[in-house]
Image (cartoon, rainbow, N blue to C red):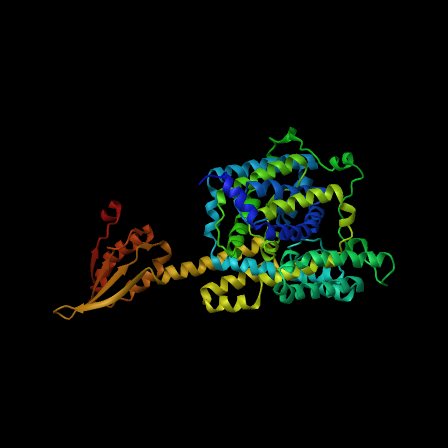
Amino acid sequence: MSATPSRSDFFDLFKHLNRDLPASIVVFFVALPLCLGIALASGAPLFSGVIAGIVGGIVVGLASGSQQGVSGPAAGLAVIVMAAISNLGSYEVFLAAVVLAGIFQFLLGQFKAGFIAYFVPSSVITGMLTGIGLLIILKQIPHAFGYDADYEGDESFGFDGHNTFSDILQAWDLLTPGAVLIAAVSFAILLLWDTVLTKKHRVFQLLQGPIVVVLVGILFNIAFMRGWLNFSLAEDQIVRLPVAGSLGEFTSFFTHPDFSQVAQPAVIKTALVMAIVASLETLLCVEATDKLDTLKRVTPTNRELKAQGLGNIVSGLIGGLPVTQVIVRSSANITFGAQTKISAILHGFWLLLSAITIASFLNLIPLASLATILIMVGYKLAKPSLFKQQFALGWEQFIPFIVTIIAIVFTDLLTGIGLGLVVAIFFTLHHSYRNSHYIKQTRSTKDGQEVFELVLAEEVSFFNKASILEVLESIPRNSKVVIDCTHSKAIAYDVVEFIHGYQQHAKLKNITVETIAFNPPKHLLGH
């Protein structure tokens, strides 16, 4: 399949502009504080997050095969970035590591490492989406109350003596009436838009509720500042985008990498860690985004790795944070109607244009307005009906699903997915343990000897050794057992060795052992 779209494919992208355009504006409003918050948490220049958002939208959007995924700076990399900047001594040397990480990612795509995404079970992906939904809700409640101790985009459970739940309790004690008023009005608008207005007239489908929420939030903030309403918002309760007084000042926000130390082991190690973590987050997000896609399109994962690699090369060259495909922005993109990648690309352009032209206007947006939009996204990811649906599928699906959710909420995204994957693998191994063989009592010979037939499955691993041992050791004395390997394509050496040994010691119980299509290695036959 060619990575270059045909002319007809290009024009087909714009068929859905009536849905992609408003969705792109919503994603822009969601992405802006996340870009700034993640830069702040990473100990990097504030504008580096915006650069990463611009590159994630425009560069990765153009190169990617994902129709609904959105890329940008990721909270999962914030701790790695902060440690790397400190260890490498300067932000410019860190940028060289970002460029190198992009090259590594591009090579991963070139060598077709994208297949890793397909090894994550559906139960874990669904749990990831639901866990992220709950996490969004829990993390945004304090912002809706006006308590903004954590940066926007924080995904960790807690640090420095406070956590997700203590922040909610703290927010309740220290709520800001102005923020609560904005959040309450915003919720009312979103509910009215979602349940009533969009069904009344097509204009309400084009003008998305979140856009109205942002505009209303700005009006409230202006009213507070001018004394029209007896409320106020603190500086940390609104968006804070760096404002350039001139084009020259704007270009000074961009930083260039220092390649003089790019061959140093510390730089190479940092680049490898960022490439691996960013690739894993991207591949997991790709799987989740494809699962949410109503058209069930499949993103080419190797192309996605190359697109992300290209994005990190460009982001590093102009002073941006590392980028990945990110689930919160992708979920918002899908939730508010995006059909093609035009939405992701446009959101990058809006970030660029706004940073150049209307940064001071955007700095009027209350975080409480954005919190309500994200809480709505979180609810749609974690609807109660989803829990009922997963429970109906049985324990093998439900338990990994629940473990993934709990682990994401109480740890972080990658740890949660890892624990969910471990539980899912346990169920797979348990299934294999139970289905590696079956035994039946077939007949009695003329002398009354009982005959048992043990039929092995196509794949018999070392994990099945214990269950096969248990069955064979339970065969009564003075009987006969037939071990049928006719259908087995692969039998682990541990199992072969045990069966061969059983042939020897079964004689002590006067058990006759017959094998069919059993071919042990020659060195065993010599025993």
